[in-house]
Length: 252
Image (cartoon, rainbow, N blue to C red; front, side):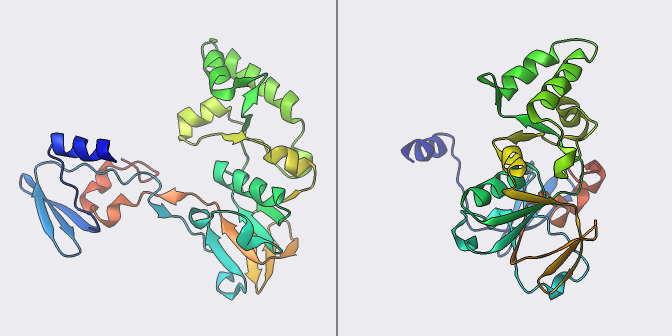
């Protein structure tokens, strides 16, 4: 803490806390920044709110009738509040995969809803972190590295289709380059699925009371829907003028 205090003092940085920015608007050569109870003017504004600013909450048919609890993964701390309940984790990104694993390892009845094809990589292979392996494969020309990676994953994970998981046609490195989506770094979720500790279902179609109906026609009685459904930056909410500088994912 002393370091941060001395750093701020040395560079004359004066943080103002508990100020929610409501609007940023450019007027001539200055930006006008309005908070709840103050306003500021500046020649430059740095927006450092991050990609994961606002939790993304899906909207399913009948969602308002759900008699259980809906919780975004942002508020997940540990499995204790879910002991003795049947939990449906929605989404199998890195967060969803790890939350589902954590729940299942603590004997919580866990189901995970998977909407799209997935791209999994092992956390480590022969003692080497996957990041090191991927960098080495990326140096191999003509897409051979991606092909080798695919063969390694097939041997490592086996046929995942029989467990209800569809594998993405994009190689993990290609997916990261082209879509910006990080592959799922597996720390044991796949084994838990294979062992039957985590049940896999397709996307939710409809909710009635405590009954969740899935796109394959099956239904499950659920106590908690735990949303691992990503976040949104939503910069336009407080900076409307930035709209022309955003990509298809609403990111600058």
